[in-house]
Length: 300
Image (cartoon, rainbow, N blue to C red; front, side):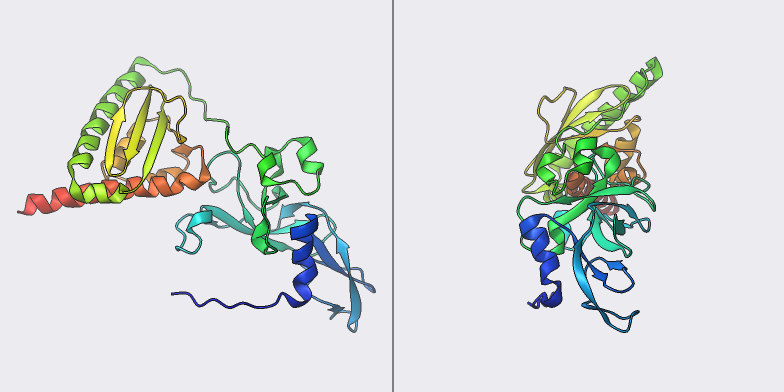
């Protein structure tokens, strides 16, 4: 249960209005010592006998002050923005760090992608309401030189649709044999899942066409409101792409021998869209529900 409060932004109002209306980041600069604090949390500097501060614009590129933790399993209040990193960024021209959410355009956000010292760029949402969530940061290494220097860069200007997929070495005969056997076992599991009333509930109301690419071959996963199937065919316009060098990574997950979400976090499985982590979570539930049903049936 959440209790919501509505409060005035007070002395923070210029900071949030500048984000919303001008796509600028403001700080407060002490007129005596010159320290710049972001956000502009003070109207008078406590280190200089409360000398007044003045609002100044700071840069929109900075470096991570710490390695950010990543939230994968968010509460319902934040589920729509997960997975996301949360860290503190020291922007150019600032002396203090600003908290910001962190994302990547390369697919799923994983540990090590953004760490202490990583250069990041502030990105503005297209629709802004005057809140700190109107902005987020992505690594500068994912942007062009023009995007890095541009002020007020919006999320619609980034390439979210076609992240670079992992490249696998040429498959050997053994790799192809492993792929064939793994695919056969996954198709058997998929058929069992579609027949299981309990397992079907895990993907009830959910529809996704997923392209899966492995070292040995490519196949498609279809989720359609409780129905679950796997076919050996390429998908021209999938909802998202999954890629893993060894198909047994996915087989183990569907067979409830390891969590698929863990494979994503451990970089064994790549997905092309960050927000589709929710689908990966549903696949784990699908496997878990089928395993429990089999276990209960064996006791009878």
